[in-house]
Structure formats: C-alpha cells, structure tokens
Image (cartoon, rainbow, N blue to C red; front, top):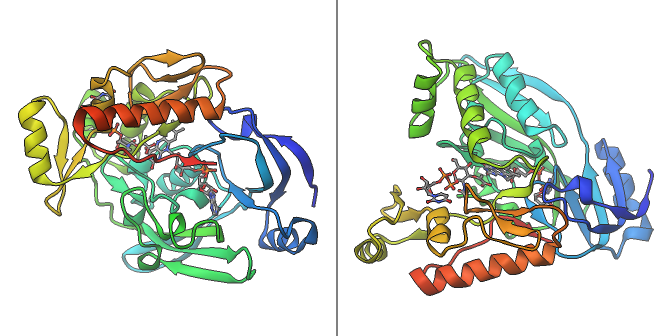
Length: 338
Ligand code: FAD
Ligand code: EPU
C-alpha cells in the first residue's frame, strides 16, 4: 500500500479544484481496501471514497484519507431466458460498462451513455438521463462497511432509489465502500425513445433500424452538443436537482410566469426545469473571476481555470437565494459538497 501525503486532487475531480488530500491511497481489490481500513494510522481520520470525481466539489483541502477506488472487471455472472446479469467492478469507467453491454447486445444501459464517472458511483445518486435511471437496470451491489469491515449485498429495493437519491446519501452516508454493481439487462431490448430529443436526433441521423447502439449514438450526440466537456471546462454536470412542486403551486407560478418549464410526474406533482429558473434570474453565462454559470446550460456551474471550490459554492448559494426570492422555489444541490 502506497500512502501519499498532501496529495494534489486537481486532476482527480472534474471541477479541477486545486485541493490537497491529507492522505491518499489507491485500492484495486477488496483485500487492499481491508488493508487500508486495518491501518491504525488512519483510524481517526475521515474517509472519502473517490471514483471519477465528477459529482463532487472540494471547498477546502480534505483533512482525512481519500481512497481512490480502482476495482476493475466486467463479467457475465449468469443468464436466464430473459436476462443477462452483468457485474462491474466499482472502479470501471461507467461509459466503458455501457459500451461493453452494447457490444454484447445486453440491453438497458444505452440511454445512460457518456455519463462521466465510475460504475461504483452509479447507484449513489441513481444516475439518470434521457428517460432512464440506473435503478431500471440495477440488480444488486456489494459494499464493504467501513467500520465493521464486513461485506454486504444490497438489492434494488434496499438501495431506496429515488430521483438522484439512494440510501447511500442518507442513512448509510459515508458508511460503505461500494465494490461492485450487478445489472440485470434484457436479452430482448425495450427501446426507450420517449425523451423527445432522442427521437429527433435519430431522425436527423437517418436511423431506420432502431438498435441499442443507435440510441447510444444519439444520446452521445445530444450530450456532446449540450454539456461542457470537463476536460476543457471544469464542471460536475447539473449543479442542482430539478425541484418537485405540487400541481397547485405550479398553476400559480404559471399564471405569473407563462414560460415556466415543468413536467408532470406520475404522483401528480410537477418537476420544474431548474435551468429555466436560473436563466430567468439572469445568471446564465455570468462569471465572477473563474467561477461561472455555463453559457449554454444554466444548471451547470463551471470553473474556467483557477476558481476555488468555495467561490463556486458561494455562487451556488447566491443562485439559490435569487431563485427563492423570485419564484419562491428552493433549489437543492446535486453535487456532493466536500
Ligand atoms: P465521484 O464524484 O467520485 O463521487 C460521487 C459521490 O459518490 C461521492 O460522495 C463519493 O464519496 C461517492 N462514491 C463514489 N464512488 C463510491 C464507491 N465506490 N463507494 C462509495 N461511495 C462512492 N449524473 C447524472 O445522474 N446524469 C447525468 O446526465 C450526468 N451528467 C453529467 C455530465 C457531466 C459533464 C458531468 C461532469 C457530470 C454528470 N453527472 C451526471 C454527474 C456524475 O457523472 C455522476 O454523479 C457519476 O455517477 C459520478 O461518478 P464518480 O465516479 O465521478 O463519482
Ligand atoms: N433550460 C433553460 N435554460 C437553461 C437550461 C435549461 O431554459 O439554461 C430549460 C429548457 O426548457 C430545457 C429544460 O430546461 O428544455 C430541460 O433542460 P435539459 O433537457 O438540458 O435537462 P436538465 O433538466 O437541465 C436533466 C438532468 C441531466 C440529464 C438531462 C437529460 C437533472 C438535475 N439534470 O438536465 O443530468 O443529463 O436532464 O436527461 O436532473 C446531471 O445530473 O448532472 C445531469 C447532467
């Protein structure tokens, strides 16, 4: 085990925040994780599990141990008449898992193409995009309890998935290291092109025979046209969640703001497009030093070069305050603040 001290994290988070970890180790197996957890030197240190660093914001140096999860491997565990069960090590790059599935005709993850980060983080916030969420294809995960050092399996139900939510952001926050995730994928694809933009893109691409690869290509094209590439501009995707409000609150807002964008949910509530709210408050394209709001997507906060995490955090607070003042709607951060 190689332990590094005061280790720079700038290249390990997609916001490219220049923070240091007091201690830093990389692990590639359950045995290596246990070795780290058994090390008495770290007993009293806070621990942060790091995947691709694409959904967190360092607001200061990390005062404890950062454990970079590099557990690899993608394998077909079993198959039934209808399904393939595919297990991915937590340190596999998410898009590589999606591509592996597409190459082998395992259907279900194609709408989630090109989401940055690692497989192990995918259940953390139940990643979602273009009409799908990971919970739709999730079978189970394995995780090591940090204090008890025991391995536990979590079923889909036990993860308590919601919109950008799981049990690991609440009652089990900072308690488990996810080591692998198993997906239940369809042998017979159920194409999901309910999201309008996919249909339009497929049409533009001239696709006649629908396939999971065509859907993946369409999703990649849409994402590349809409979202800033973290390799070019530091960001962590949507900084806030889209807020859910009741239908009656929505009606009142609609009377006052005719252009407001909302989508009806199955439970009768309405999900508002936070990007629209933020844009209406005048934030889109604004920058303050190197911290800013992206010029094409107001839901994405960016680091143009050397912004501090605390500057991006302060900007997010100002945005939340102004949205609350104008619309009476509270925004919640999606990005994990460290
Ligand atoms: P990290 O940022 O490293 O970690 C995120 C959180 O999970 C942290 O709290 C960390 O401690 C914890 N964690 C990570 N791995 C483990 C583990 N193995 N065990 C326990 N805890 C762990 N998200 C979406 O849902 N939909 C999108 O469409 C989307 N688009 C994005 C676009 C861009 C350009 C970017 C930069 C981000 C986007 N995201 C999106 C957010 C991000 O890609 C996802 O949240 C992703 O799952 C984060 O993975 P990660 O490995 O980078 O996690
Ligand atoms: N909009 C604006 N101004 C903006 C941005 C958006 O008015 O600057 C309005 C537009 O009307 C647009 C609507 O908001 O039609 C929705 O925008 P978009 O389709 O870009 O989706 P989003 O709500 O901004 C969500 C997810 C993304 C996911 C996409 C596609 C959240 C918080 N974000 O974004 O996830 O990729 O839909 O499904 O749910 C992420 O979580 O990091 C993420 C990028």
